Image 1 (cartoon, rainbow, N blue to C red):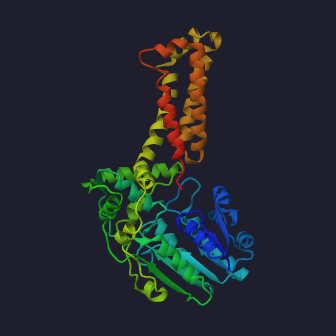
Image 2 (cartoon, rainbow, N blue to C red):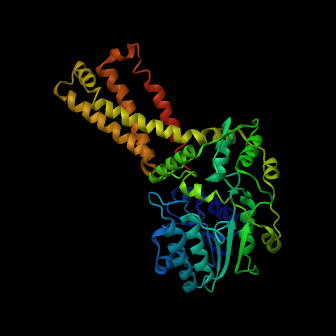
Image 3 (tube, helix red, strand yellow):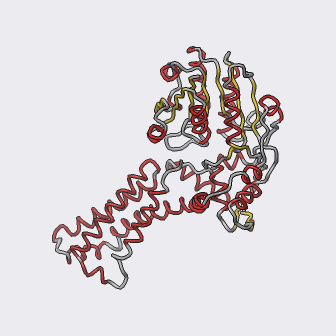
Length: 430
């Protein structure tokens, strides 16, 4: 079967692509950025495609050419830099469904979210519901899957957050979090494959939920036990502290990052992520496993513990490094301006002393801003690496006595270089 996968580089989409390939299907994967995916799986027909911008059926017809089924795994938690919840979940999806009818693509497996048929506390769930309603009004052989929080060996979003929080010796508990019925990624992918069969039922909407209700701290404690760490103490955060964390997440989202803790999460977690898996099991024969049972069946590696420890540190690393460069530039233009000019004069810069200090300061500020923005962060980190090496060479040539300075300005550059390399190593989200 020739299958088109939207959101093909995400947690669920990438797993669907890999499974379909393993079973001999021809796969077309679309996402906004497919460069890494092309290198990893060249046998897939990868298409760089912005679903939020494809709001007319005509835009979809070329990518649907030859497809016999579509699995829509695309999703956006919250509006941000270059991301539109309404564009992906409602407008882009509606255009794709209309194009499927026009192109004769009958089978559409569509990922929604659990509970959106009951309550829509955010734009995320409201637009997911709109996408469902649009699909239900078509004449397609549709299947709507409403998963709870999906976890697997691959970690992204909620599943990454559980690991990161598990690494903390004190577990912060957000106020007002509802219960969760964790569902396993492998079971979700099994469900997709079941409904892509020629004789599979259609025009059904199913809740994909695990068999047990767990509180958020219970989920994290299960991961902590799996990773081999003793139980963490709970710290119930006051509302003001939780609100501050969500607002910081929103700010990071405005810079292009995708933190799982944002204001949408705050509104969604109050109702939890629970449902009835009975109909899912009855139709497919898939019996969901408990989280402890699934974790026990897959022993953790040292890489899992490294990831857990670095996950929470990553935002701190990028925040500190970005502010370091920005404030270095600001200080060079203000309180440290005279010191900088004197050093340049000592090194023989002459009339170029003042312009050199100003140029260096502006470069530092620009690098700091570039690191803070997700789309330019890697470029900013490489620029930081290059200018740091330049400062070492220039300082050695112009003012070699700095190597013997008791405050060690030249020696302190080396930890900064190491910090830079760590940031480059963990820059990617997935």
